Length: 270
Picture 1 (cartoon, rainbow, N blue to C red):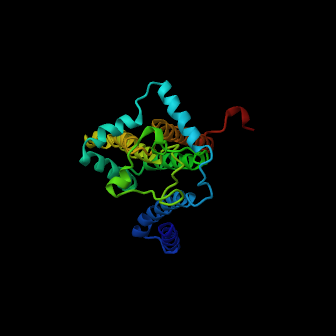
Picture 2 (picture 1 turned 120 degrees about the horizontal axis):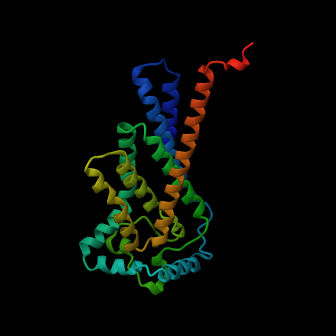
Picture 3 (picture 1 turned 90 degrees about the vertical axis):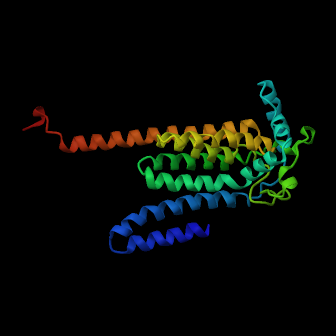
């Protein structure tokens, strides 16, 4: 939140200064920094709301598990079994979950803002949509797979000493807000946004960030498959809505421009 306040203050200072090449270049950067840091601050503050109760969370988790089994999806515990056979792989998954998702998103946003300014607002708005959707849906309490004792998950964060969760109600995130997965949602922004904006061969490597994140959140027992599916659908819905609004805005602007410069029809002349 302090980064947001500093960015807003810097934006106001630059805006009030006389126009210059440097100031004009910094102004949109400070604006975007304030917006993104504010969005992240809201996400962090949301965990402080009094919704740490588990009422219905375990029941909904079991319903999701039953639904996935009805769809014949592989169990999340089967993915963890593959991982825990190799300590290095289990530790890598745990570190990937705890560390990478925020830095990867920040690097993507800076890269998109600097190199693809025209496409950046579209994906920035998609990020806002998926984050806002996750904030709303989190009020429907859903426990992660590792909270169902009958599934026999190993707590990788305790085993390897790096995790974002402490006792229930503490840590940097809400443990009963498994649905949707913000990890998968942000990974989708990074992977799909990079793939859409560049033709570099590196985009195929960045695209792997999404399926790897899906596997990691399952292997660590933090999310159900459907948690990721819902997050991706929120992103796609936000992108579609943003695209439609942009097309309407462009069409309305063209109509106004045409109306301003169009000659007066002969039948209206006096």
